Length: 314
Ligand SMILES: [Zn+2]
Ligand SMILES: [Zn+2]
Ligand SMILES: [Zn+2]
Image 1 (cartoon, rainbow, N blue to C red):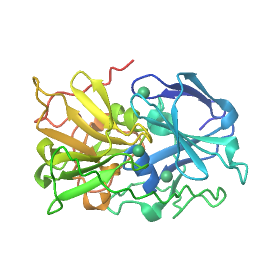
Image 2 (tube, rainbow, N blue to C red):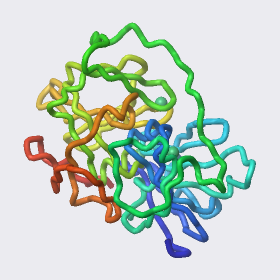
Image 3 (cartoon, helix red, strand yellow):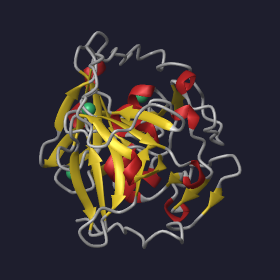
């Protein structure tokens, strides 16, 4: 990343915009930690370091979530996009830096990643073809562990649909634990990775992967998510407290809801169980993001699904 590069970015809905100046930024890290998955719903997140003094919100203000004693994450309260990560306690001068989620940046393809971190938590089927240094945990010179054991709160008994544990039932939820869900995964139509710019801009993540669930076999079991109509044909849900993206659903044809929805792989409790078999919107793939494996590529949406959602947000 060149010095004094100016980087603009913001969330999908446009409520929050920012500008960051690269200065002497040193790291652009792909993070494979569980918390980043649960904060975004994404499959992995890339954090671009900027001097905190050179970062400013140019429109709106994000909501913040204190994800541990050490760290605060910021996201758009209207569409849920994760925007930044920063240290709040400052044992080692870390608050002088802010990390911006690459997925929210306007020109993510211009950014050159430098490291992988928390590869001990990397999904075993996620194989990325690059030669970047890999660290099993945090970068050793940062010594920042954003690990917070989440409180365990009992599930609601007031499910809208009763879905009981059994074959194919998967549970998931957001990082803060406010919203949880249960769904029966229909393996035959399990979907894959999506490279589209809208998925990046709603999650902040670098790669988003979707798992198909019949709508009738899905229920939120705790809390109610925020809903965001990301286009005239689709609605996405996310946690209003921590921002985690949870579901995508095409708008119903008439009054009813559509028969299918997709849950974010990063929000599921056992993401290892889902090995994506396809990648879609490969025309929008980031230039350095090479996934290894027999993933069938599609340049746009899967042809048997409805038309592209299209990135037309202001
Ligand atoms: Zn937004
Ligand atoms: Zn992380
Ligand atoms: Zn949450």
